[in-house]
Image 1 (cartoon, rainbow, N blue to C red):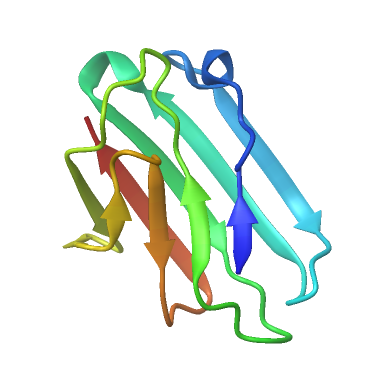
Image 2 (cartoon, rainbow, N blue to C red):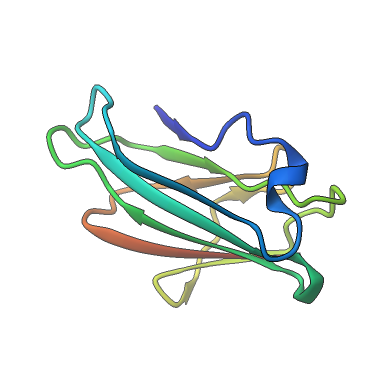
Length: 106
């Protein structure tokens, strides 16, 4: 599995904050991602450029709400997405390539 933002401190995702990673080398190829918090309005947004050398399935994206609110719903590329774990704050991304947009709702 490829983990993204696994150890992110909650304070890094307070309202209006952003995390940006470019050209991060992984076993699966380079990956880019950006996470932007809109926690005051109950959402955290992430955009990813999936690695292309080897398929990473699943890619686990951890989105930690600053006040530990559980994830209530997720959309991936604008569609409802069922594979998330609200207890562990993880969205499990399967069989996705290229640019991916994720919205977690709290």
